[in-house]
Each structure stands twice: as C-alpha cells, then as structure tokens.
Image 1: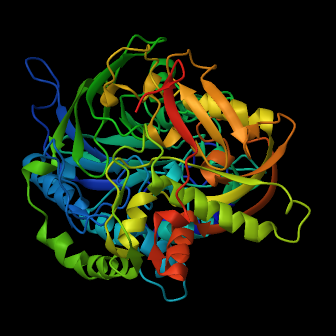
Image 2: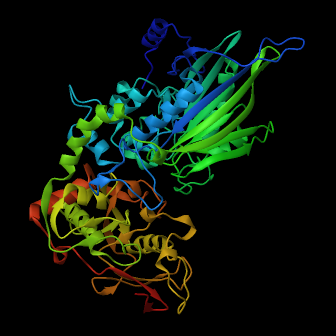
Image 3: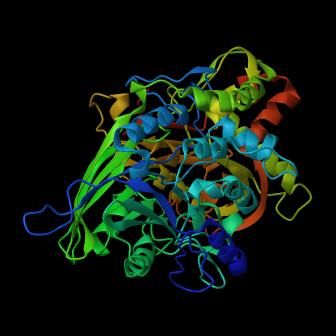
Amino acid sequence: MALNRRKFLKESAVTGAGVALAGAAAAPAAQAASAGPADAAGTAHGPGKHPKRYALTVMGTTDLHGHVFNWDYFKDGAYSDAAGNAQGLARIATLVKQVRAERGRENTLLLDAGDTIQGTPLTYYYAKVDPITAEGGPVHPMALAMNAIGYDAAALGNHEFNYGIETLRAFERQLDFPLLGANAVDATTQRPAFAPYVVKTFRVHGAPPVKVAVLGLTNPGIAIWDKAYVQGKLAFPGLEEQAAKWVPKLRSMGADVVIVSAHSGTSGQSSYGDQLPYVEDAAANVARQVPGIDAILVGHAHLEIPELKVVNERTGKTVVLSEPLCFAERLSLFDIELVFAKGRWQVESVSASLRNANEVADDPEITALLTDEHKKVVAYVNQVVGRATQTLTTVEARYKDAPIIDLITKVQEDVVKAALAGTAYASLPVIAQASPFSRTAQIPAGNVTIRDLAGLYVYDNTLVAKVLTGAQVRAYLEYSAEYFVQTAAGAPVDVEKLTNANGRPDYNYDYVSGLRYDIDIARPAGSRIRNLTFGGAPLDDAQQFVLAVNNYRANGGGAFPYVASAKEVWSESTEIRTRIAEWVTARGELDPKDFASEDWRLTRDGVPVF
C-alpha cells in the first residue's frame, strides 16, 4: 500500500500542522497535531525561581472487540458477570469526559491498542450483513463511537485483518484519527503500509511546546492467523526490531515524550511456537531492550495490568506499562510529569492506573448516536432459524464429549465432503476439529436463533480442508490432550482444576470427530491418547484423512503439529458460524440424533473419569 506522498503533504499543509517524515520517503508518516494552550505550574527558570513543569495524561483502551454498549448479544440482555464488570465504549466515553474535565482536554491524549472491528455480532453485521465496503454503505459503529469520543490514535490489532484488507481500509478511511502500525509493512518494499506514528504538540505558556510521539506496533502473528488475506501483500516484523528503528527517529525529530501503543502482551511468549521468528507478546521486551520509551499501552493479552514497571537494560530507565481490561471494561491512565530544564523538556515521572467502567453510566451522546445500529443488530441476531428438540449446552464441554460441539464438527464434515465431491480427494475420510470456545453457550429447547448459534461459535473463523496421515492425527490429538492437568488414578477430581494446563486457553483444545479415542489424564503429556480407532479398527498411521479445520488452526494458531504445513485441498471465505446457521435452517429441526457422536472420553489408567 504505497503512500500518496503528494496527497499527504497537501493534507498536512492544509491543517497547518508540522509534518514528521521519519524513515523512508515512501513511509506513510503521520502528521503532527497541536493541542490547545495549557498552563504550566511554576515560572521561568532562574535564580530563586522554580522550573517550568507540565502534566500530561494519556488515556488508553484496548481489545474493544466491537463492544459499544453494556449488552450481551448472545444472551439478548445487559452484560453481567460475577465480578460486576460493565462493558462498552459508551461507559468509556463517560470516563474520558471525567478525566478531561479533571485534567483539561488540552492536556490529554486518548489512544487504543487494537482489536476493534471484530468480536461481537455488531461488528460482524457491519462487515458482512450490511458491509461498510458497499457503495454508499454505512459508517462502522466503532468509527462513529471512537470519532465522537475523540480518539487521537489507535494501533492495529490482529483482529483488524479478520475481514480482509478492503474492510480494514474502509474502516481506516472512516476514522478521524490514524491507525498506527510501524511493523505492518508492504511485503515487497518493506515500507510501512500504515502510519507508523503520530506526533502531538502541547502548548505551554511561557515555555516551548511539549512534543509527544505515539508509535503504533501490531502483532506478528497476523502473518499466520490471517495468512489468506495478507500473504504476499503485507509482512509483520518483530516489535522489538521495529521499535529500535523508529524510537531513535522520533527522538531525533524532537519528541519530548515517546509513547508506544502495542497490540502485544507482556509475557514474552508466543502461541505459535517457532513458526515465526518474532515474539507474539513482546511489549515488555520492547521496554527492556529499546531506549527512549516512556510508557507503553499494552494490548492483545486480555489481561488487567494497572501498572508494570520495566527497567531498560541499556539506560537503567524505568518504562511504565499498563493494560486495561478488554471489551472497554477499563481505561488506563498514564500520568506524565515533565520539567523544563537545561533548555529542553524532560520526563520527570510516569505513573499508571486504571478506571473502571462499572463505576459510571453510559454517555447519552454515544447512546443516541448508536441506538439505531444496535437495534438493527438485536433484530438480526434474534431471527429464528429452526427448532431444537432439547437444550444443548457447553457447560461440561471442556471435559466431556458434548453434543453441542459435535454439531460444529458435523457441519464442518458435511461442508467439506460436499466441496470435495468429484475431486481426487473425495474418497478420503473426512474428520473435523472444533473447540469449546465458550463455557456458557446454550441452545435452548424450542426456537433457535442466530444469536444462539453465534454464542456457540464466537469467532469469525472460516473453513479449510487439509490432508493428514493417521500418524499426524495421533500427534495432533496428543498435543491437544496437553490441555488437561495430569491427575492420578483415585485422586479427587475437581473439574475447575482439570483443564487449562500450563495456561492453555479453551480455544486451543480440540475435539476431533470421526475417530474414537481415550485421553488418559493419569499419564504424562505426550502419551495420553489410548485406544485410538477409526471405523472400529486401530488407526493405521499411513491412512490419509481430510481434516476439516478452522482457518486459525490451519494457519498455525495454537501451534498444533503438522496442520499448518499439511497439504491444503480446499478453503472458503464463508464463516463457520454462517455454515452452522445454514445447516440448521435447511433442516428446520436441531436433533442430537442427527449430529451427536461418541468420539472421546477422559480416563485414568483406563478407567473412565466420568
């Protein structure tokens, strides 16, 4: 995505703002913007005088995932959880107004660290049902809300790419602020495909202005997770390397403060193993390795980190990190104190804290702005597509073979079998994977709606067909079985402590249909799959199968063995969620006898756990 340099310079000239062209001439550098004048405490520095000081507050959100209101579209009611959290940009808007009133709007910045346009039926609706890419199409609700609240910049998240580059670019055009991604580069030229940074200038009476640079960094895993959209078009080098390139340039341009908005967690680990040479959760690495950074707004990990202090290895300077809880449940505040000394502004201190969205009401401006869009989506998700003969739930799906997950695998099997009919692969048996994404999804007996099915399959994954051998399938299952905590035969079983070994999330545990197998959790990881059969006989390691698998897993998400490198024989762009709705609609009735299968069970030394 090459920069239109003439257009960029013209627009910058029109705004009267300074232009920051750090790096290659073709890089889409962001224009500098000026905040209004602000009073600084103290007087001009001199004998018996105090130095000039300035207080800046940087606010931040992350992983909004389409949450505008405190509403659960899957349950068709107000959101609630055991911790009493509240969600939504309407609440964040109220918190932002409070902070701006306290500190002075001219002394604040508002940033986001990515994952904005995917995650709820609201975002799906405006990507697929009434898409923003259509001629004369709507403005994305997240753009409407974030523009109204007055965001200054946002980093790209990996989920920004889930609907393809065209949708992302349409969203970008609708924003009044830049989407930043210094490490989202053109695959051919290696030049930034999005604005790497933005520079904001804050006026101080009686002293030079304070220049604040915001560098945006996104997640290298996009190259795996959305390979179908970005391969050959965009590349995503590591955060540490790109920060080391850009931070010195921002300092050389006169930045007094450097803030990084990073869609990357703090753990230093990666979910994709060694498939990429770049760390997924690298924010703390950036703070530790790259001099010149004052604070980092952290995203991606869906954790709550009020304040994390990391010491830079080269300078000994403390860098302050903060990650607000996802879904607009928290707002991070970085309070930055500067002093004007020796002819320049210097950061004297940085502290971070969180504000809770459950402490305020929705902002009426955001409510009025987006009520119509919200009502459209509520009507859409409440459409009836069939009837269920009995209630199906995911409550026990983590540790028992649940029919509701078998529904997913059955749909995937049927779609892939139909797609491969008449091809060279039609004779191969089709098996399918699915994960227990939600612990609370339920399809009630009676009318089945789109929201019931969307609550079962909460991600916008699409379907891929890969060829694996029996031996590879066995290894795949062994890796999946690492999800369970080793539990000795005869020991008490607490289902709340039985899963998520080594922090593995539920979405990285897979059922595989079409086979029969035991998972012996008394045995160590790597040797748990027992009695693995296909068609009533022991699995032949040389047998070939077609695995119906979601695109996240097919591209290497979760680092399951063999699947990413396996031969791909078919794929599509229709969401699995939509395929489930089509399957139910075509039949009119949802009866477990049409899809439920007994594929696996947990055992200990051969004895069933349940």
